Length: 348
Image (cartoon, rainbow, N blue to C red; front, side, top):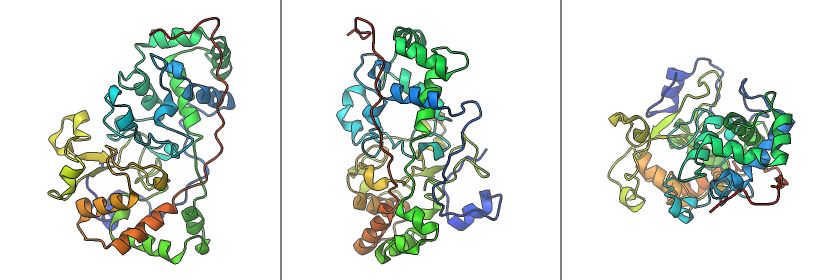
């Protein structure tokens, strides 16, 4: 199992963990992610997962659904839910779900080893969906005739269960792919896809060390494959260089990241490396959602990770390159949700 700490350079990372010489640090987004054997994709399961994703009845009080914090009409992230849902005590920004199937772990501290596990934790988290227990979830969905039919069609055991709910949600989320960014076109050989400014930004992205952590198909480190198994995490220390003005300005020391999961002192301020795909559409930035501007996010990373003193012109070039990572979003139509019979299932 690979469990990475601070990566000092692209070359060092290559020597340590790359088992094959064919590994490329800059990769286009593949046509398909790796699908788990225990949850194969089917049209019926995906359609059911889409309904569940948009159904507020999966939350205890019927006030939020998955889309509330992962808005698929935008960047697939919370767009600041860490702030406007304070009554739920949400402390971390919700990452984007676009291209999420190309990741190996989930949450900022990588504590969920699969999309299915991530979905289950959300259902019963008192600060998110707040479902009291599995029996309540199952009975609520069983009382909806349309869901009884849909689960029978989607699963061989034909049961409404937490397992099947999470498998359906994960199956739908694995369809959330935004391919064919201008970077993808460029890396596949269309050199005119990037202009000169964007090419300078890509060169700076390499030369400044950003590629040490933000590489691979999702610009989030290794994807599931030869170097990393599903459920293995790729971490980074942040901030690495202590004492900058940004520590207090953006409260970077208030949350200790992976330490809260493992209680290992060496894991303080360790974070799963986030994807940079569609990053221009996923402000605010960082685990606590405190930086609203992509230029400022680049300045922060330059100072707290490398302290190079990157110029404003260089920052602007890097941002220009990062904007080329925006893919083509597929149309997402709202599903029709199955009706309840005669009364609401939600009690307040």
